[in-house]
Length: 220
Image (tube, rainbow, N blue to C red; front, side, top):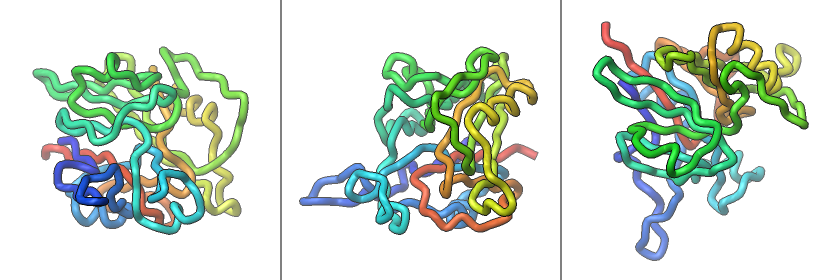
């Protein structure tokens, strides 16, 4: 079962009696307490209450998703063509996972779930080139060629004495070694989050209010 935030229960902030694109984000710990996910990660980048990313956005909880966020066929945030997307298609034997290198209306049509992030880092087994290289905390995902296996990755980079983080190409190398055919980056830095079996896998607590999460619960 796929679990996602935001969803139909989220209350958007009102202005002049009208619904805006803004809502209150969640810390990973809060998502973990609300949803019975066996594993979850953060997904899309986001803006703060003035529509930009700055120190105030980092310290407050008002959020606006930047990029596609589609849950159970309902679009909560529009696509950004320069960013990639992780999508899920329901079939007779369950879901198949797909990574799209660009978020377009045409490519996203037909998917019941779609989650944005940043850029494609592995396409058809080819590691993508980036002019600018930086190392940071990362959340990323990959998909096998047959679309039946989803790979999730989180990398620490907030405490430089322990880890410098990874670059996008370094993440791609890991996914290719694991067997992924396609991979993409989600929001990273201080947003990077992953819980497994209700436990934070990072050595530190993520205190940032994230705009979106993607979780899975499994039948036992």
